Amino acid sequence: MPSGLEGEGGADRVRRRPEQLLLAFLGELVLGHDVAPVPSAVLVDVLAELDVGEPATRAALARMARRGLLAPVRSGRTVAYDLTPASERVLRDAHGRIFADDPFAPEGAGWTLVTFSVPERQRDLRHRLRAQLAWAGFGLLRDGLWIAPGEVDVAEVLGEVPADAPGLDLAAFRAVEVPGFSAARSVRTAWRLGEIRERHDAFQDRWAAWPGPGSGPTTAVRDLTALVADWLALLRAVPRLPVEHLDVDWPSTASVALFRGLHEALAGPARGELARRLAPARAR
Image (spheres, rainbow, N blue to C red):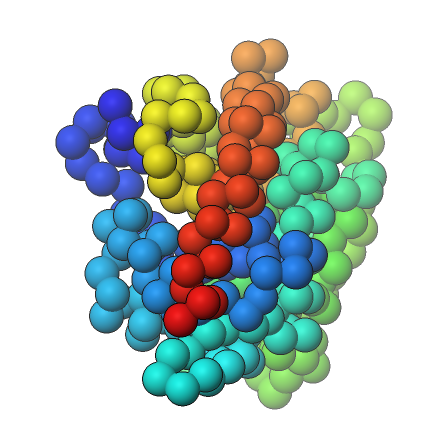
């Protein structure tokens, strides 16, 4: 079985975006390890092992360079890529979430509530705000009322949309539960817990099949890159929910244990393998 990289259907490969894989590779094997710049040929080879074609990888590298996430470094006919201050900031933020004591627990106590209205003619703004709130882990509690566990930085969630943007009527509040009125029902209303559980189960089913290190000469870099990409995808898709309002068999603890065990097994071999890959590429 090919190292836990196949989908639940067996023969169907998991589809991962090139940028997603590149950020996982850079965060795990480049940031803080004094190996940059990384030759583009090495990046192309790693993603090829994850079923990403060379044109797609090079296009992703070009997009990331245009966005200031990578700095191309030319040496004759070859191109290597170095990190930038922007990518280092993104990768360090991701690292903090990946290795948090409990990455699925809310940050801070209580709840954050957001309500907004937008004129009908500004439907694009409404769609953008809904998408940003959902991405940040908010759930729709009632029509126009969004809720997230803990103390969420609403200004950061809004991004480039100012709270006083023309036509936008937005308010944000902190809230606590009233004794005797559990928020468990609100959690089940605002979030599709069945779908969240399925995401955890899919991650566990996929990676429980990983056969362990030493299954091939060049597997650790590939597998670590895929593992971290899948873990980040799970973290981004799953809101931080208070465990006291979830079922006793909620799968997040098992997901964390599986990821940490696999990461511990893969990190050392992957760094050694990458060093061996970089040696001939830099000797050219």
